[in-house]
Length: 197
Length: 199
Image (cartoon, rainbow over the protein chains, first blue to last red):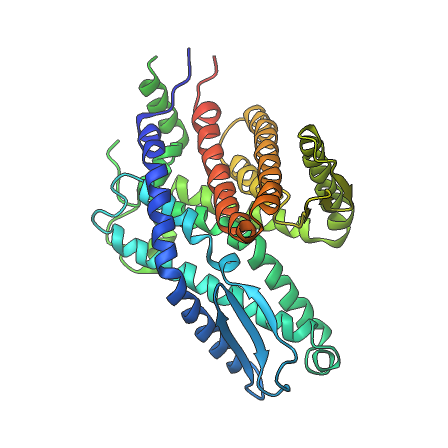
């Protein structure tokens, strides 16, 4: 028998190109302001975990400039891509928007919750970049202020955020928050209400 | 049996009887617990566990040195062969692919292993016979390899022709595309192989 995708999957695949386009547009529109939000929150968190509170995160286009106010001007700045941190909003939004009826009913609420998780992941992603820069790349200052244990912890966190978290969060949030719509595509039941037998 | 009949039969066999959880679980923690009691929740939990273990193994220094770097060099050589078929005269040194016109370094995250893990973890975590899982992993490996070679070669030409677009194409176009590709490949594997009945 010739294999054919289920009607649900065919509908999902038909919607995906347009959903991807919409996701790119939304992401591009939100990107400038979002970069500033990420920088501000990450800077506040970095400062909350250090003494003296001197971490600085400035936005320069699509990049974050990370430095310290207690260093002389022009020294010790890291330029890191903000797009690399938050581009995974695109596949996530595309997957959500491609699901028929994903925003109906409680859908908007779930989207907001999923986006909140994503924003938290992005803030932490930038925070680990800041911490790793301070812990590894500032020569004797890094060695004096960060122990080998701290460097290992921040290095591991950055690795896990840069690759596993960034790559897999779209799929996990899509399956987790939109289980009732996404899981039936793969024949799994994600509803928590009683089913009729 | 019709396709719809096959699908429904498989859904029943996968879902079993324990998708039901009592009403009235309105607290977030209870909702999460209730979700984890469903087949979908159990799948997601297995997926996360396998994923964490998989990435932890890849991050280990010996694995990174002896497997990941060698694999990345292998990817660079595959791209070199394709580029040389277009007359680029490319060479590979370590993980750097260079020609007289442009050079790219293939890092972790650009070698396709992450897309592979998204897919492989999905296959391993899904309730399906092992034979079908192994078939899925083999076919998925080839498909992701092929797409990743297209990605590296296309990025090389973006670098040659429009270097100012390289960063954009590298991060938000191709990384988004590779994530979506891995997810779609997994969904297609489920529908084509995991949910299909034995002949």
